[in-house]
Image 1 (cartoon, rainbow, N blue to C red):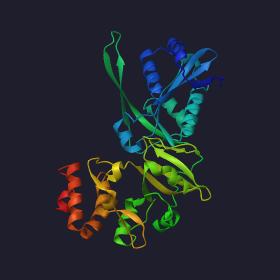
Image 2 (tube, one colour):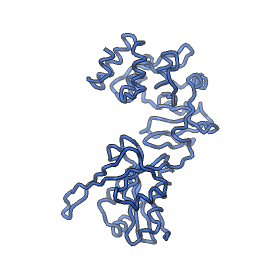
Image 3 (cartoon, rainbow, N blue to C red):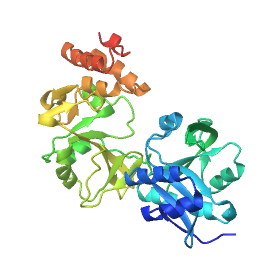
Image 4 (spheres, one colour):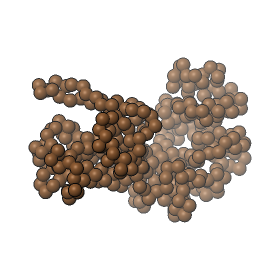
Length: 366
């Protein structure tokens, strides 16, 4: 039987009624404070004036290390509960759907949750609603409870981790049909924006040949140039990308100052064409995104092809790639090192020392 309920985000004035009905004052006060800080939302199901269930959308960095490693900024649905007298009446489903719709509206492309290995009924509900267990094994969820005297007591539960994609008006995150650097140059050659090609395409522009397929194309601009950059791409849809979500930017919207990427969508092709990094360039200096002490004048950091396409110098591209050292980054290192002169090698070596005096690449650069 399905019981009609009103599911909504909690308001401060409702906290006393929520605690009176569902107890757990410490939990609800904590989640309310996190909601006030913009880090998540507490959803409550109401039957008339009575709270009968709740769920929380955790939008901070995942607490579980393996979840953070595998999913990054993916929101987690926590603490889904229904008061015992009201269970098996569709209230849990109503809560889940409300949380999912809210997350999708914020631009998230998926949500995750943990379900105890012995909680077979809840897992059947989640799977019926489109959740699929990931392929990275069980997850130990750890939290803290309070003894009657207020003493903190550690608690844990081993969980299956389930993930569900969310509907979006944007293309899927894999739906890329990136432009070639020459096409980007054609579209921006008359622009006043100081831009350059970064990432894997910068490697190939330096080498003078395409060494592999590129899943995207990455440009970089000064954040202050965003309005002028946007004017160059009227007719395309822009999405603020960061922390696990894609938020479409309306005509008067600016990117979130905490985020550093804007994706350009071609509505006609329903595909992504370009990923643009928004850089801070104090006094006209280029700064490594993960090594803020590594700085160079833009005139040194950027070079050009014979056709005039600007791109980041190879030693600085390698500094960016030195953070993660993925297989393609290692391949780029092997391809680029023989082409670097002594000054470029010195810049790369100095940057690597700043990152880690024992960085594995240092022995190759010396």
